[in-house]
Amino acid sequence: MKITDITVEVTSEPKAHAVRDAIQLLDRNGHTRVRIDTDEGVSGESTTYFGRVESSPAILGKLIEDQFAPVIVGEDPTLIRGIRQQLQTLTDYQGTAGLSSYGISAIDQALWDLLGKSLGVPVWKLLGAQRTAIPSYAMVGWLELDVAGLERVSAQAMEQGFRGVKMKVGGGPLTADVQRIKAVRNVIGPDAPLMVDANQAFGYAEALRRGRVYEELDCRWFEEPLPAGDTEGHVRLAEKLDIPIATGENRYGQAAFRDLIARGGVGVVQPDLRRAGGVTDCLEIGLLAAGFGVPYASHGGGAHIHVLAALPNTIYVESGLLNGNVELVDGCYPLPEGPGLSSWNG
Picture 1 (tube, rainbow, N blue to C red):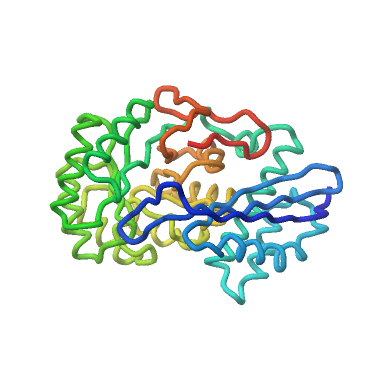
Picture 2: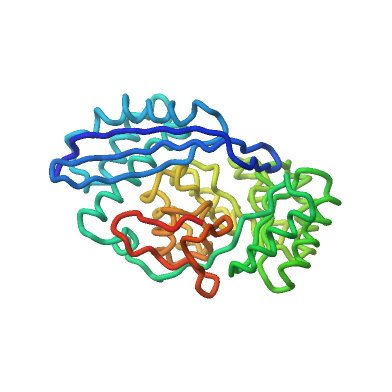
């Protein structure tokens, strides 16, 4: 089997409801869709969310069409790690981290989808699944919501059967965080997991100050307290706090996780499928973390659920509110049975 063609389709439109975290307003839906065709009639597809800037999906699509496609047309699509190496070598001069990683991830996911479809099985079965359902929490606590809105969506998440909720912090003074956390806790009850996410908003001193308060409020983890690349700061912070530090969504490729994990700077590792490099790199990052006894929780859901099914250290898949196409079972997402990277969309 050989790759014969790669096609790209892009869309970009305003969100019906813009959401805000501590550092940015997310007001657009952008997507880059990739299709890989073969001489045996089997195709694989991927869809990469690439929001915020209107032109971003088209720029990513241009990179894939002009740089990546000419290199891998004619290759055997089942040699997924070999193709990854080709693309990493190709992009080394311009920088593999960043936009290039988004492109490599898009190709990687489409290849896994193609492989699963060629064999008629979901990708989680190819990865050596350990479970058939993934515990899930709802990321619903955006900062544009007032306290009443925050209480309303948190209650809805619990009604839909999620194990717990995550909320944004750092958009205002610590007193505002405390008020909002207490409001959510009152809604979800004393035992449900409540995670807080600062989206890289703090320096070390402020992260330490707020982290001690989040500990007292019984938050399950403190996500992205510092700029993503500050490994030393994460190590120092983890030494001072009892609350686990969760991070990883803004790190690119497996190599960016090695020192962070080995030095104890992360308590919950959270790769992003797009930035980390796709199914292949996320699986390898997860296994690296498992070797150090560090739990793994995805940033986002979708196709990531196939990786989560295979890892021994999986604790959660992240989701938004359910839209009616799937029901949770005991707080867990059931795995999709369709071939390739079919997924439920929360």
